[in-house]
Length: 522
Image (cartoon, one colour):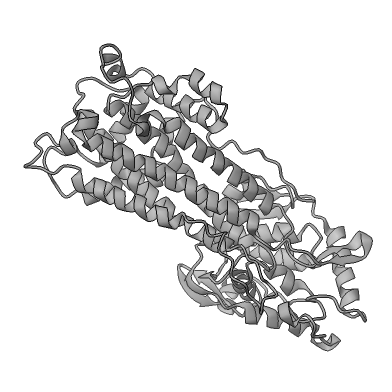
């Protein structure tokens, strides 16, 4: 069912962005700043036909800014800009990303600092409300001067010249718009430039990753706690006194979640006295420190992305109250690039420590469990190669997590001489998330298998529920069998939020995604 969602330009919340990402919403602007939009659009029309050159309004673009454009060609200038900049390549961006692009761009332009008419904002919102998804190739942006190519493809579709995705297939824009009863947009001075200047593609891609990783990180807590109990680890490292002395918020919160997940475990009680292991391996003991640090970085990235979603990021900006157009660089996506790079490292680290927990479980010298979690090792190889797969995914993540923002390649004949690479920084996050989910899926199977060796003792109520979820999909491995289908099912449980209900059992704990809602728009 499609539900209405009122948004205030410059004051979007993370929850609203999450709902737009999920789809089935009809957007409407609350407190529409029509007067400011009219004033800024009127100012643009006046300067467009004035004697003075104004970048992108009556001049060419980039290195061609010294070329003056005649009054009769101003609309053609904007149309040509969109046509020429629709030069992306690669697979199309998924609908949730494009939906966010449309909505964030509309919210940015509606603040009245871009010199566009209400009709431009309405065209963007109408596409969202009709669930009309422009065809936007995923590659081609360097994250400065705006996400030019992807936003140009988005705009070209709204003009009736590009393409839309309909049931996963490319359909000419005019046909798709007729089906959705949408009218093609006709551009006035500056409107094409305003539509493609900006960071909305990079921001949408990073938000897509943030929302997609949420269930995986939640699963990481459950799976990590299950491994602690399966390996007969200590809950001492989660003592709140330890974490209070350090004062790192994410670490404190993660330790609290682990204490809750392990509370009431008969397995833990059985070896609380008389266990001669003084300290657990770091992969068990340091989970709050590692995953908590990752959580802090993800929370900060969420705040940066929330700010960016509420920002005005095109150029030049129009200050109608001062009768001024001012050129600047808000289109430079460095904040998004650095946030996406931090996300990449954090997501990869969640997978890296999970891989180490798998390695610990299958090593009898550390875990004191049967080798490779097989009751008949030698005849059976157990989880030997499942761990190899996890190791390969963790290693791949190391390369993928290399910061994209440090690689700037000058463009536009050196006019645009430092760029952010934010779009790639955000786009590659999906592979890191997939790999990390795969590692956690393997760990979930291994932890459940390890728990078999503690029977008839039972773990906590929460972790026994996680164990039951695994066993509903994957039986114990008494002898070697075709394991890949079980790995796929366990990974799906991680990726799709199947373990989320376990965390919802605890209503007295801090929210995992506690992001300060501090929009910064006008």
